[in-house]
Image 1 (tube, rainbow, N blue to C red):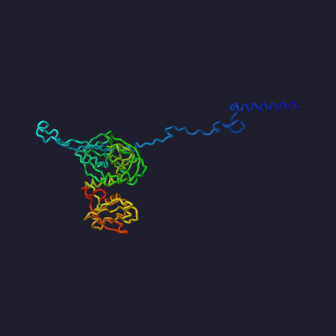
Image 2 (cartoon, rainbow, N blue to C red):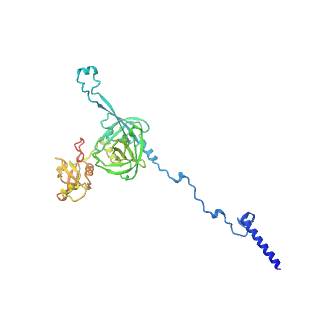
Image 3 (cartoon, rainbow, N blue to C red):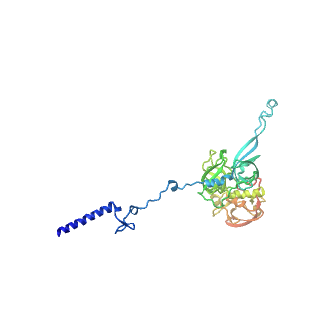
Length: 399
């Protein structure tokens, strides 16, 4: 009996050993029922034990490509090249009054006119061919020619100009509708926004450069009478004047005008006239051929701490009235030299440049209220706004 039990135990042990080897090494030998080995639970698979692999991404998918191509392609057709010519006379040869000299050389060395070429850029602002550019691009030009983005060249005529903002408006005599630029919102631009400068620098052809808005409201640069520039580090070079400064959506935010440079090339400090200012000037020129601005006949200067102390002026801001033109609206209204101008029609005066902008925005013929500081107190004075002279009598810092 003991022997029989020993044989049974050894047989069971051997059977279990064989079953373990089969389950481990050859599970497919076992009968399968409903996807599981007979009489047991589902066997774990490698797929169940290992975590799911991460999705495979290529380098192109992982790194988003940043491009301003759409903005450039939207604005490029609206930017044109402006070519000008004008007649200049060379100085007369000192011996031209000598009869012997004139006998041999005739008038060949006399005061003969020569043609001088000019180069700039412009922006199409309406489908009927109205183009915005800088006044210094077309100033004193006898002939103006505009080259479109598609290569077509057409003559242009000057509708009007505004030297005090350095803007001019042309009309291109081209068949069909022209691609007009889209204007950005007047208050949409911020410091740090990406901008593109488009123009024809050095006559190399249409060129796009990229930068950011470095500053807004730049003034007192001595470039124009009325200054409210956008500063950008987008490369602007000779030939870019009058071209477009557009935002990352391809909408016009400024007209490129000037650069700060010691060499004549870009040093990363360029200036553009805001599109809102350019649009306002353009609309007035198209409507009447000129720009009408308000004028009251005062000369102002910056209010330094020393001057403020001498006039016992305890506040901040404002502009000092340095002079009043006799018979001017300010003179008739009672403004005196030594007054400090605080507000124009309820809008605070920050400095002399800001005062010029506020007075110029007034409508000639209407009454305006000026808030002044005089003899330790404030007072309001009503003046009838005049029209700013167009012949240059109203100089910089004089309104």
